[in-house]
Length: 248
Image 1 (cartoon, rainbow, N blue to C red):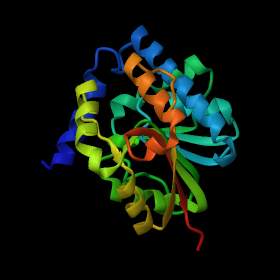
Image 2 (tube, one colour):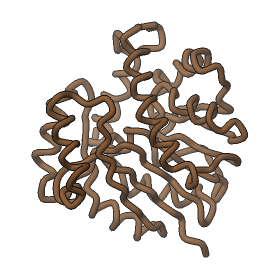
Image 3 (cartoon, rainbow, N blue to C red):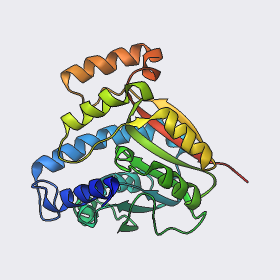
Image 4 (cartoon, rainbow, N blue to C red):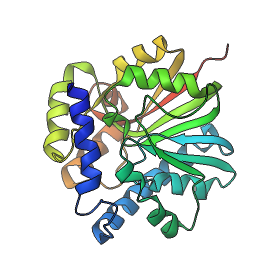
C-alpha cells in the first residue's frame, strides 16, 4: 500500500468510526462545530458571489458530510449541486444536513478528488471548503478539475491552510499536532501555481486571514496578518485558491 493509499484509508475509516461524525451519530458537538464552520463558508460565498456558478452544474469535492453543499444549494437554489467525498461513510450523513438546512442537494456519491463520475467539460463550477489539503494527489486532482470544467469556468478552494515552500515543515508539524486524528497537510502556493499551469489552468491566490472561529493565539496571529498584508505571502496564512480553466 502506498503512502497516499494508507492516508486515504485512515480518512475513510475516520468517517465510519468517529464517535461524533459516523453515519449513526447525532452528536450535538458535531452540529455545533459544523454550523460554526458554516459561518466562515457563508462569508466566503458572499465575498466571491460574483465568481460563483449560481446556476448550472456545480460539484463539491471533499464534501465530508455535505453540509457545505446544503449551504450552497440554499444560497443558490438554481444550481444543480453534487456533493462528493472520498468516504461513503461521510456523505451518507448528507440527509441530516438537508433536514437541518431545509434543502435538497441534487446528487451525491463517493469518489476521490481525482476520479469523479463527471463527463468532460460538463461542470459550471467546482468548490471545496477546507478540504483540498487532504487531497494529497494534487497533480491528478487538478488534471481532473481541468477535464470536467467547462472552458472559462472556475474551481475554488475555500479557506485552505497555505504556506511558502520554505516554511512547509513547521506548518505541516503544527496542523498535524493540532488535529492528529486524520493526516493533515498544508498547501504550498508555488507548487499549486506550477501544477495549475501544467493542467491548463490559471491560478489566483487570495489570502484570507479571517478571524472567524479562531483560538486566542490564532486571533492575534491572523489579526496581525490582516493588518500587514505583506506578511500573508511570506508566512503561513489561510487562503482561497481560484483556478480558471483556460478557454481554447
